[in-house]
Length: 406
Image (cartoon, rainbow, N blue to C red):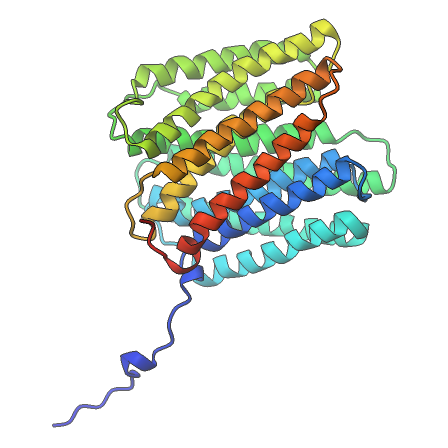
């Protein structure tokens, strides 16, 4: 008997859009796009070439944390957090809707910062609402996940919650400044957004994933993440309350604590493949950045000068950016069914990331001691633009179409 089917022949089935088939692909691509665009806008605003409706420094902090870094967090977490919790994946409709609204709102922030306060406020408000939606989605995954060990997912949600608080503070702060209400909000938004969200969230992920990728059996000390969280929280409080010497002490204690713990793991840095060496060295930048940052802040107080946020930039470029190069490359290749390895090109990008950091350190030191070397500012930003442009040009085709890397 002849069989009939309601299913269309294979050749007539609509093909799934590869670019949108996994959450990390569109978010990673646009993270690179906004890393370039937002830095160009900041540079032009900082130099006075264009006039921004908010302080260029506020724009710089907000755009990097919530338009650039958050894109990579969204791509990574919506892809891997369900595995951490042994839960269902985020639905395609959810992450596509989030992606589309996020990019439209990010564009609104960029245009609004240049032309219109109202557009800026509306766009930031939408991004805050999206932040709420993602946090709720992560909580649902956490609550209904089958995993019996949820310590790391718990701290990821805590970090994401602090990010929401900081995001709200930025939204309120932009309106406060517009209406010239006397309330200094930036330290609260910066401390909670950068340290309790961007740095702590990356720290939780790195402390979990890097030993796992390295196939190293380690026994972390009890209460590792609660201790790290507490010290970062105390550091944030000292920033808000301007207890600078106390902050320096906390930085040194936290840095030495993390360094001792990482050394105890005996990660096989030199005998590992290049992609793992990048991640290992990125992990070491966290304690080193805290300790070096503490001494730079002490130098500021002793000499009564300013190194223009050198401590934060060491962590942002040394730790965060290097982690993004390592994790971004590994996730991009691994989820495209390609060997997650770093070829010479990727190693070169890692080296370039360290050069970007050195250029930024030179700018801080020369400006702190009133040495006329403004070219170091242009150099550090130019190298940043080259770094993200080259990474995007090389790995973009993998994210967009699944191109094989030879």
